[in-house]
Amino acid sequence: MSRTRKYLPEWVKEGIISSEQQFQIEQWLDARQGRLPGMIFWISLLAGVLVALGVMLIIGHNWDNLPHPVRMVLSMMPAIAGTGLMLFAALRRYENLTWMELGSLLQMIGLGASIALVSQVYHVNGSMESYLFAWLLVFTPTQILLSGRLSLTFYLILSTWFICSAGYNYAPDVRPMHVGWMLTVIFYSIRNLYHSNSSTLFLVRFTWIFPPCFALGFGTLGFHGTDPELMFLAYAALMGWFIVAGEYVKRADDRFINNGLRFFGRLGLMVLFTIFSYKFWWEKVLHEDLPHGKTAFLISPEFWVGIALLVCLLLYPLMRVDRGAGLRKNPEIPAVLVFGIAFFLLGKFAPLAGMILTNLMMLGLGLYYLQKGISEKSLLWLNYGLLWLAVLLICRFSDMSQGYMARGLFFIGVGMLLFLVNMIVIRKQGKEQGHVG
Image (tube, rainbow, N blue to C red; front, side, top):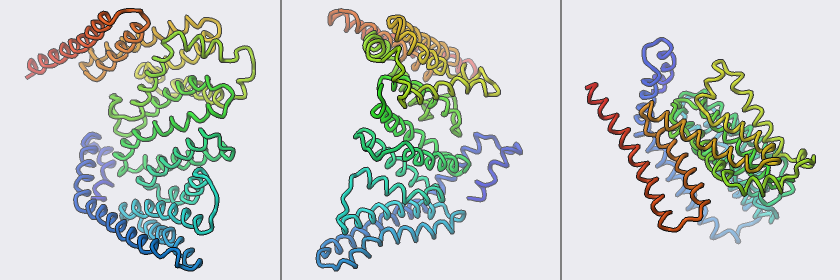
């Protein structure tokens, strides 16, 4: 089966099969390969965990009676066993992917267990941040060498845990370079998996894990800067880059529901625009709290990160071959750029105009995707556009001092409108299918 998978890209180039057929064949091979070997893998993993738990219970019961050298040797056994299995997997990397996944994962678990046991034997004082940092540091060479899929998922989760635990607690030992090498390892592993035809489905699933983890760690910039209000600008640019990065996911189509990067990018942008559709955020947060006319915020890391992301987002469409196609396909990108400019200009001089501009952008995005859903007869884009309009209507209705009867009738009307528009599109699709048939 691995040989068949190897020739699939060549068959697509020769025109023997299409890219969709290649994707279907890969899905069939994954399902076929996962019947028996996958079951053996998980049963073997469960058996190994049960044996390890039994040994740990026996050793733990007699731990106080063991001499110090024996404790030290036993503490190093998980790391030695995991490293030995990893080396064996590295030698058979191109023969069996199951060994590679199992070896990298078990070594990661073994290293974490050994670090904890050794620190307990020698009574080493430390924090959770230092433990996670040491764990990630010693496992980094293995992740670079094997780029295991399961270990990459755990590596991302542990890195997010470390960044959030250290960043939101103002840990003095955290430096940008610490976060930098973790992100470098993660992106290097993603790059290796991106060029591997056998990891296509995993990367599609990984796009649903990476954005929330990265967004959580990204927020720590606001805790170390002087002007946390600038994080709104940085997050807007980050959401735009999530949407852009979603174009490079293999097997990604135009529907963002099948792409975690686009989904979280558009969801985050909707939340951000909803917040700034109220006058309070423009007047209080930007007009009063942000130190306009001073240069203090120029030393804030969140300011330069937000500006750098916005500039790159502006230059990205110009460097593409199709140029304007990216903006037409993703109207959220020019919306982010307009928001970035209005963030400083209107936030300082005309906060009311900034609120009106945000509401107009929400209205424009809603109408654009509503028209796209009707023209393409796509319920997904139709409901996405209706969601923008519904959120805008609810936000503006909440500003009015109306009674409960008026509020109830308003929500009923919005719900019925969503239902009727969907029914009209469904009936139109049914008529066209019946006419074609």
